[in-house]
Image (tube, rainbow, N blue to C red; front, side, top):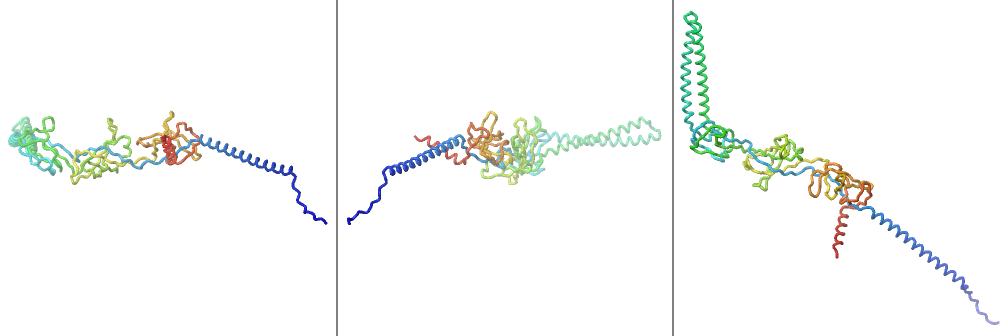
Length: 404
């Protein structure tokens, strides 16, 4: 028997293997094409999203907040004595002597100076003599009238003569009263020889000296002899502007600052107001009282009155970079719950430089857009970012622009 080789597996025909490779290649091409199409779709969607996002402005917002509960107001103040008066002479003569000088504390009724009045002294002596003469004449007239009344009862004299005597007695009695009144007047003038203090206080001026001619009265002839001031308490007058006068309350206090006491403040309380505006300055005059028992403060001083005035709870504060100046008026842009801009017309009060008071048109807690675009429209959608992020982006952009 002859040996036979084992049979080998028959190879695939070449056409069949070629078709398999083509099929694999076709699958790969389809996969590559599908991936490319998906990439293009994703890129187009991303581009569309970025385009839409760029059409929506990105804004930073802050919360509109209440203004301060109190406002610190500093106003100039004038300090005056609690009581202050010039002292004039009430009689004519020459100054005999003065016993008090400037800076002297006196009590009510204390002697300040004494005046020599030779003319008044002579008139007083004459008035005393006139009174004595009038009383003597009156005594005789009264006795005569009584006698004639007794004779009239017996028809020894006529009724006419009796009436004349009675009338003369009444006239003499009136002359006594006149002479006595004149004497009392001159005695009063004699009392004015002593110039006394009208109330407790400090002598702040002395405008006369021994031997000076003294004329009575406070008119153009009379000269002020002394000036007295009560400084245990002081009156402080402040002119309050019209826009803050509604904050003045009866229990209000103020802290007074004086140049001579740079580290100290003195508490003053409100006593009264003028209840009317000065038409020239449009201010309200108020009066404060400050205790000066130690005499540290002087009348006539200049002071600064520091007052904490309550403000309305309806007032909010916003930065000036939130304002929009439109033809329809001053506005701010807020963001609602749907991230849409709402333009609101506002009324502002005082301008503090970096921020302003809003008295109407805006409520506390609303989200207000910072640096709103001029093209911003009412109801326009916006993209809100924190104000810090917006500021950092702006600073980064400015830094990039400055690079060469």
